[in-house]
Image 1 (cartoon, rainbow, N blue to C red):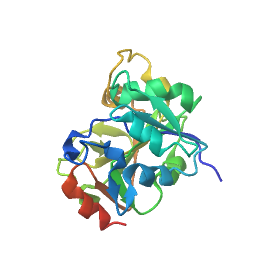
Image 2: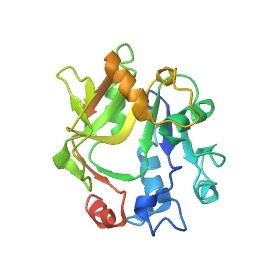
Image 3: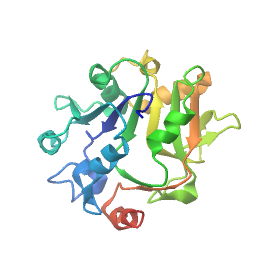
Image 4: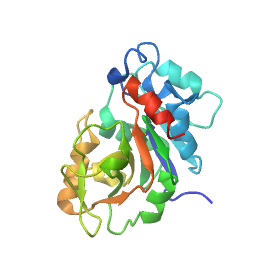
Length: 223
């Protein structure tokens, strides 16, 4: 059975500076963990989607070539690196109408499929975005203080608590008013948090942030 929403954007346009020197000749999503690229790990999790879109900027021809024999669509950002918010808005013609999934492609998951968990918890009548959150003790490779605090009714605010795992459902209508060509989804989330329409759901498994080369062997322990 397909997922609802049915379309997802996989972020793959970044410069991958923290992953150097591995990213001097390839984009970070094509770095391999356990013999499979980070991008393919993410796309496999989203296999239930009817439309999968990947954005590409840095070394974009490598991404395009890698996906050439798949049904994955490319959102071409070679003219401008738009950040996450601008990248989502640029990809909307490919994603179609209504709420969509987004997923960062620099993580490894161990446990339930994150897309399934988000779809089960999504309540469009009271949510404009639903973020998947990881308790800090289940987040490997993450050294920060955490990103979000969750109230008893599931609403999120920003502060040192759980880690945002890089997967969400978001209603593109939430981008209204963010008109700069380059902007981060963080600005959108902050607006939604003030309105009370930013929600979170906890991930019960484990997760590894693969942002640096030394995180690769750590991530491989989850496979």
